[in-house]
Length: 324
Image 1 (cartoon, rainbow, N blue to C red):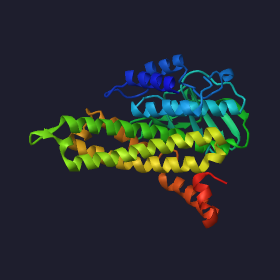
Image 2: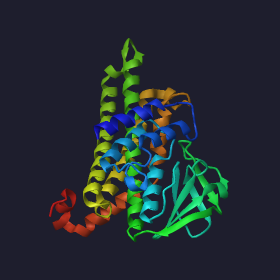
Image 3: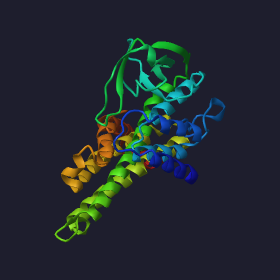
Image 4: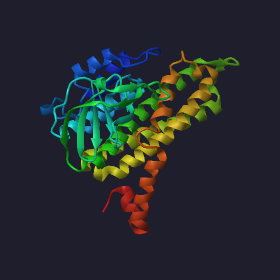
């Protein structure tokens, strides 16, 4: 895992760009060449056969360096195609859920990918976005979230019935890891700025109020990283349906951390942190956008609460600790 982490951090750090927008084709090519683009897909299906522990390192690094590629979406799309015994094409992919019409709303990176994998129950379809009428949109981080109408179906198949349960969990885990990475980046920039910014003859990092605020942000980042990594560990050990509680807790906790870390980071930076030219926005706009994507905090907290009520007083400790 350490080798994967080092490779991922180097690849994404090299592609860091404060000013650019849109798909980073050069970065995607590097991801394909290094085997990071379809990390957990089995080797016989064209992937790297990596573990979820490897995926933690890669997805977190992508969030940390604001990677302008559909990494999580491609991983999800490849998993769906493989589950339906369909060939996984090369190039970046995206995913969508069929809403009962020929319109796909807010497709991540819809305009930039070579294919979109659509899930409808246990039915999986690969559609061609180039054949669709595209209405471009973005999230607050300026990542494409496009509406596609009338996309042509290229291939379709049937996956096991469990995919409908697993898909939102896998998506939530991927988004949690991205959030943890973006929170780490915002904290690092805030600490660095606090040591460089001098007021009244000394760095503001020497002020107790700033120290306490950064310590709070550090605790939030640590909680997000721990929760998302633990959820991946549970999914690796038990499978995604059985790890639903851990994934739900991770996405909710990472969403909560996103709000706190973004707030503290901008407080520390002051007005300069809100400017387009400043790198902080790459982290904080993603924190604001991603916390509501693939399920909001209220949605996943609802699952956690429902599980707690179902367990009852006698079963709550076993539920929280994973013990019989």
